[in-house]
Length: 371
Image (cartoon, rainbow, N blue to C red; front, side, top):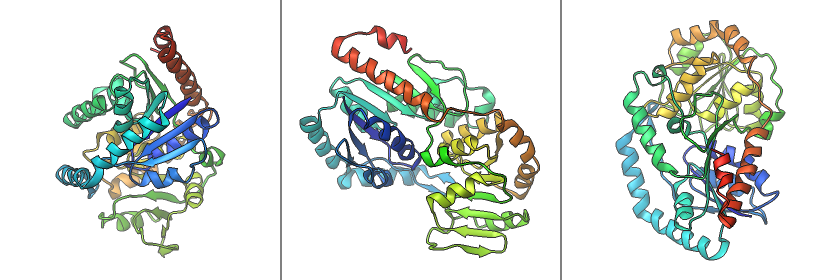
């Protein structure tokens, strides 16, 4: 089977998840990936005779002071589109149509591959975590204070990959499903995370992707606990110590070691790290990017499940509360378990076969069985 696989390039979580799925797909299929942003370089390293990776232009999000800046985001995307983004994608469109000729499309929240599939009447399968906002029911407490942002996010996500053959949603929380052709599955995890063994430690792992919070060092110092900090000083080539604060350059294995042995994790509301922390049973204090409802949703469900805390902003008081409740969160995390990546990968394999069969032979009963 020839599969066109679209990966959104905003944030690395989609690429990390897709890497695991692609490694499985190429065992049986030929796969053409279309991807934008930093995610292209990450996935291009895995290209081989069965996996081809093509760079396209994609939308981006501008954040400052841990908040999405809507106007700057609009300007950045208009500039990118008219400075070569759209012509680049049009060329890629015709190249794929004439050479690769896919049988099925898989979209990880990526619109270009979806439009290609629709225009060529191909079955489309959605694999991501974002669709949970639109395709599940959520208690009012999850949206409280963010109702307008929820409606905006829901509308955007609904329009992203509408009318797909099936929606596979990765998640560590399980609200009621409200739409057909939707299934919920445990997070897709990197092999390095699956191989990691959680061990008790005394340090906090701090991961921050924005660098303008000037109060962060003093808040962390007040806790009087070693903090291993990633993302704040991006120019680092080696560790830099400031008392009990250890700023570290990014290293995948070093980061995983600090995660698996952490007493707790302080980060944003991104799904990938949150899912890894839950799997390794590490309590988390999540400070989601404001005006980015998906992160707010993740953080509030994390707190609702009893796996950590959600904070609008990081304060000494919130950090103190988090530290005092770590034993409670550890106890709650003991009930979490998943069988690696088998659940979602098995469902994807089943869905691909059913979608391909329906497309070739018109056997709609397979789609109905997946509702």
